[in-house]
Length: 451
Image (cartoon, rainbow, N blue to C red; front, side, top):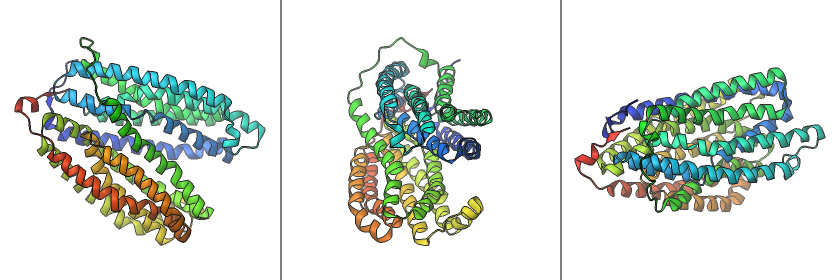
């Protein structure tokens, strides 16, 4: 199949298509996840269901820890494609895949040892001997799936580099449906915990595998082997700068609920969890919508097209303001009614102060995502990584004071203050300087064909 020859600088339709499919894939995935809950809960029971949630969360977290190498490779591949050196890009893809297989091998060996020797029943608070016997096989499957997903995850990075993220969205939807079917079969057959973990792993593995197959069919230069891999100086340093925000995201996803539980009573912690699911879904959708701009910025920098980068940055801010910030502010007063409709008699009481603090925290994160996409795309992510960890340190320092005074709302305030006063102003300034540093190049480079 011949390569497509759409010029890079006519990529607005590609951005829209990629964003649309990514959002559609996320919506299908969320819907399938909601349907899985009653199926698994009925078959597993409350305690096994909780273990299933915890083990699959561990699996998904481990699958994203590639040391930042995937994102660093994405930027390098996008730059090579933008300058018309597809043979070098294909060679770099092959090299990157080998690196990720070596990384997966190390993770796999460590995972096997930890799955066999780790006191998982103690870590997960399980006292029942029958249930404890089910944990290690389930954890072993989770580690195996996460290990296999590491080299496969490069598919999404390559798809992003060539602005074909629509493939990722489509296969995410397909994989989510297949995983739902597998969970339904596991529930029908009353399989043990390991069977449900295996069913959940389908979504993790099928999506990147399907994306790889379609990429190889659609992009002919991926099959080229006529060029040695280009030199990649500084790739390790870039990987570290990408990996630090990954660790920060893991902190926000895993450690913040623990802080809320420490400074608040159990009822308030449950309320926080319910609200976080609602607000977090909107934040994820914004990320899906903006994700295609990341490789677009990379290619604009490689072409020397500051005008395109500036227009895209403005458009993402307009979309963020009208599509996410304004609806969040308008709909937040209706959240308690939505929760009552969703959970019925089990709906928790929602304190207005906590509700608006959480809404404000997500508004701040909405503002950070357009900046993050630009800085990641042009390879200037150092300020985000450093400031992110400074913010975590300040948050931990503020929590004893604000958390003891306001409970869960105080923890949210401790998160939001350093982000609003330090992270956003500095990274905004850095983003503006990054656009100004994009040097215009000749028209011949700007007309390089798009794969």
